[in-house]
Amino acid sequence: MSSLVQTRSQNAPSPPSAEADWLSRRLSGIAFLKSAARVDQLPSPSAPEFAIAGRSNAGKSTTLNVLCQRRRLAFASKTPGRTRLINLFGLFDNDEEIGRLVDLPGYGYAAVSKQIQKQWQLELSRYLATRPNLMGLLLVCDCRHPLGMLDTQLLDWFGPRQRPVHILLTKADKLGRQQQAQTLRTVNALISERSNVWGGAVSASLFSGLKQTGREAVLEKIAEWLGQKKAGSEATGDNAFVKAPAQGGEAGDMTSVV
Ligand SMILES: Nc1nc2c(ncn2[C@@H]2O[C@H](COP(=O)(O)OP(=O)(O)OP(=O)(O)O)[C@@H](O)[C@H]2O)c(=O)[nH]1
Ligand SMILES: [Mg+2]
Image 1 (cartoon, rainbow, N blue to C red):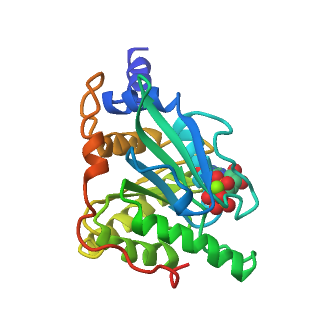
Image 2 (tube, protein in one colour):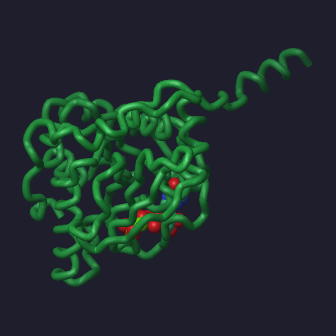
């Protein structure tokens, strides 16, 4: 009996860290701000933005919904190319806007006309290259084919902006435990290999929107980017985020990537 109790407690999920818990409470109150077809239509860069990028259909909108524990905050769909606009969601702490999550259109979706594809991709690359308050990028990859050519090209291209990137290996429910672990090892090895090109602060974790697993690691990462160190303490550095000039060189033209 006592060994059964022990086994159960060992297998119980660990409680959320203070950082993840702090952010989770604020994410539950996240509010839609704006959808923009073009970067010049975006609201002023008055709060740090954390953008979600990745191939079309990788699971970006689902990730956003799961992070915020909201069913239909962003539109997820079986049809690739569902997100066609830059969608911004505001994160508030006592009515003060402390950050934004940004759901971006996917890349690599061949089934729209070349012209439309070019227009989306132009705005996507413009956002990633020029948005001054972009303070972290969540790169969503289907863990069955992680870091494909377009993803690695994006990372190569984005590296000079010196912004942290967290690679979210989603749809982990489609793989067995061993394959998941192997995928994470492979991705971490690639990150080490390319660290000088990808700007250094690149990390990765497994995630499943379907099973709602891996959420806490992502929340901790975003909380870290927000400068939130302790639960209940004031978020620090939000104004500094806005004022900080781009470090290193600006990313260049990404039209060849997408
Ligand atoms: N099994 C499984 N399916 C998922 C997961 N995440 C997303 N999906 C499915 O993958 C499909 C695409 O999900 P979306 O969240 O719309 O993907 P997206 O990257 O936002 O797609 P676009 O906006 O078209 O670029 C949907 O059918 C989702 O239900 C996951 O973790 N596991
Ligand atoms: Mg989407």
